[in-house]
Image (cartoon, rainbow, N blue to C red; front, top):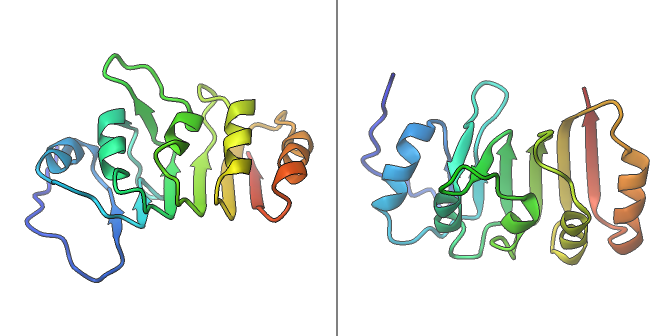
Length: 157
């Protein structure tokens, strides 16, 4: 197992934290006092973070200025291993403008999640690897009624 040590963060003013190794996330978060992030990325097509703790997620989003969240296929779990619903994650991201997810069959896109998306400041919502039986038209119609200007991108397997 390769462990990377973080000595300092580059101060380029971007407010971006790109997490590439889950085994260093909790130790890193525990050493920080505040996170004033605008962009939080948990993976891309070459690597991904399988899961993070809810406590770490809350710490990373604590300042409330996060505008871009790319969860990818990362799941957020409680101390007892329970998956935290997407709608609960939105409670910690009031300034969110961009949300990207990879569909997880264990994580429902609930009515409560749709309602929170519609009530949010979200401008872009992208979800990838949806199953072929996902009712995309119904999902889009629900969002369009309450948030017609939201740009939604649905990608199927």
